[in-house]
Figure (tube, rainbow, N blue to C red):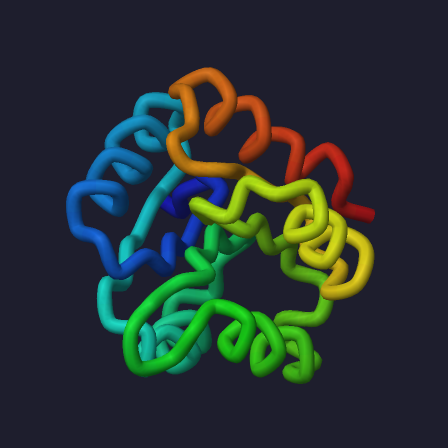
Length: 128
């Protein structure tokens, strides 16, 4: 039987946060895969074919903005909603994320369970 669950890819280098996001979203009936190694993020996205991506910005080796740009430049990911998951809480950072980079959502750490759930569901309501 084919799963009808929406697939979420979480790109987050902190294992505790990745596991928390995975646990919370699985209770909402999402299928969630977490990747902890930023250089493997793009290939993992190509293989997993997510319906949405939650992406940390501050990661070692390859930062989230670089991954974001690579994904947005690939026609396969141009229309996939991407939510920024970050500790950057300044209004300027959020403005850049949403209006300059064109992320679909901006979730700041620490985030509440309900905020994570609501913003993830919102990704699919906004999708054209």
